[in-house]
Length: 312
Length: 312
Image 1 (tube, one colour):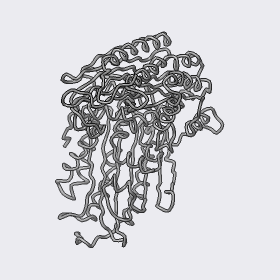
Image 2 (cartoon, helix red, strand yellow; image 1 turned 30 degrees about the vertical axis):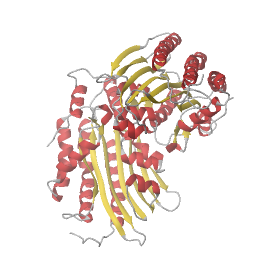
Image 3 (cartoon, each protein chain N blue to C red; image 1 turned 45 degrees about the vertical axis):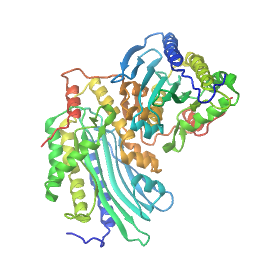
Image 4 (cartoon, rainbow over the protein chains, first blue to last red; image 1 turned 90 degrees about the vertical axis):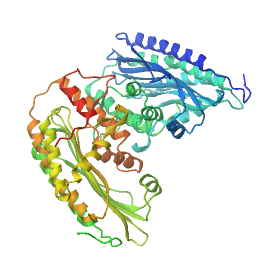
């Protein structure tokens, strides 16, 4: 499987085909589960000739109040802002990724986020200088169901394990460290999953192996999420529970706008605003000093968010 | 009025007394206009012995759905993060400020924000090395009423003019440049007001003069805002108009969490989270590709936000 250093092979074509096909599969799976509404598609192009994307948005469904499943396949000259923000050098770049986020209507159905992306960097002769994969998936419930948390993590672990038993624990930890509202005394955004970045050819795996790893994870997404949606989507809920969901969504907004590298980088480099911010929850609430009652299910969730759990 | 350089006089005591008294006055004025509810007060202390603050919050009033009028009077040793973020040197610092934001229930009543702050920096002998004032007030309507915009700006101009006719235009421009969502194709957060920072003793005015200038502005706040509230608070509104307000509030959230220096600095330096984020609107909506109908009152507002107006 290994490639020799200095003999880097581009996988952009293969990866691009994969994410477009995964987008179709995921949207179809989500539409089936929703049962009521379909994704609308917006295709967009970058100004000039640098690729574009396919934004798919669902709203006001039976299950999904709002969601986006987006692909973008973009390329161009390395700019000064990229040099500064990404600490990269080189002449041209390519980035292909799929990014999704789903905000269910029912507070007993968790919000989910996933993202799988690939980056190539070329020198002025068009040779690949650098290439890496990044990605992950994480779950943000409003009420904790241990079996759901275990199912989500176990499905992801199963997708990782064929590539090395050490990967799931390593990327699970990275996820717990990344999706954190530091200003909220290190409260996690959700109950985690995995997060990885800068996966380059190394002693053990080449970039093609990392692509297969990312594909394995992409393919596992629906299996990780849909059974949970299916189990919870008919749970009855009241106004107070909806309100709790909206308050927690506020924390989601805080994380995405204050810390999330992808969001901020996209906004600062003139990415397509509407595609980036489709991640924002549909309705959100911010209250001063809102604290759930001690011993309540809401407070049970908060405890877990302050003390990440090893679910498996 | 001028002080000589190298002979810097502290005004921290005078300024502290002023902002505490202004907080009382402003809260009383707002409570009278609301007619239904009162501010609650939370006093807090910085860990260790570095001062603290008085957070006052109003919620679910007749007029004000949520609002905060906060003072903080804090001091301590200059830390590394302050050196890096504020580009300051020195041994100890003092900061005293009042900061307020009001989110009315009725979409025809504008949101308002104001902030008046003072900073002193000392060397290791306790001598003042640097001192400056910052502040301003700006209005964020959901529907445009020219007479309201003119009244707000004129009242502020009248507060500035005694200190120099050039100040209002200069600080009005600064405000138009500061409160901007760059990622929204440079859409302004609202219709402006004034913004100023780093007002130090210079050839024309000493720091005491800038304090008087800030006091003049602080004293003008209720006059600038309350008549507008009074005129609009009984206007009937429907669900669609409320929804528009909530969508625009989303832009407010975006600005505060992505760009606002005070918010981000506070969050990154372990400020009191609940006091900082009391600025967040109570209910917010994020929709994909929401665009008001051409020629509508909503679209009239958008036009003004993309093209700042000289109201006077």
